[in-house]
Length: 286
Image (cartoon, rainbow, N blue to C red; front, side, top):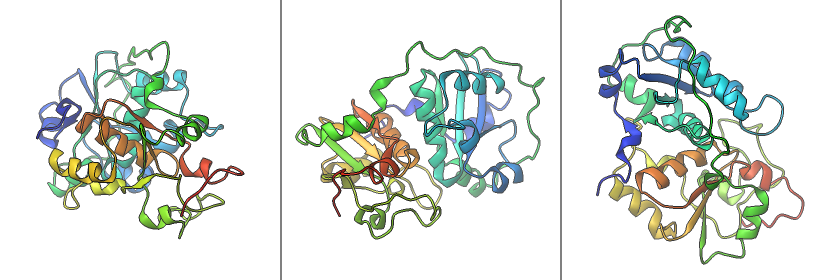
């Protein structure tokens, strides 16, 4: 069984082969660029800082439509550019950027399978040189007139879905200890937690990292992914809502379900547990 949409993935050799292709732009998406991009990155890659570039600087939200256009244009991205994203944590944050760019209508965005981990494992070249504006002139990307509301849900929609468990499945992609409420934040970010621990009633717990191979960060085969999700009720005939803590890990699972397995109706709840677990009277299971 092959991936439903293999065109959204490229391997490291493809990136090397297209390093001089003016129709292709590469960008690294990091949580902390100081320990990643700044120490060495894929030659020619731009940097998208997850906190500064992909999120709104004031409100708890993703970047605005205008900010998205400005970011991509500054990186030399046109409407017809193939944009390849990769990053640390097995493309954890690159997948979030992929989801955001799809939300605003970007057509040809892809992930480099395996991300930084795969590139480093293969001992491929790194550089500290940052692409200059003259190397990649300002692009002309324009976001769609309306965002793709089919791939994002908000709190009220999730609450309404609790009464439709026969047609809506929820997948909590956090760690088992977060799911049970033993901890309220992942060990990597202990201060970023909610007031209450647990999970949304009825959600299946399938940690996002189970979708990738430990050795090099690449995605598991389609058959392995199918066997990971479907026995737990995360099946293609249902509408699937993925969530985590703030929507980044769940965007990775959203990518897997929508593009690798071809589920027709998958949405990311980026409010996730920091919203759900902080709201008064929200139902919680442990």
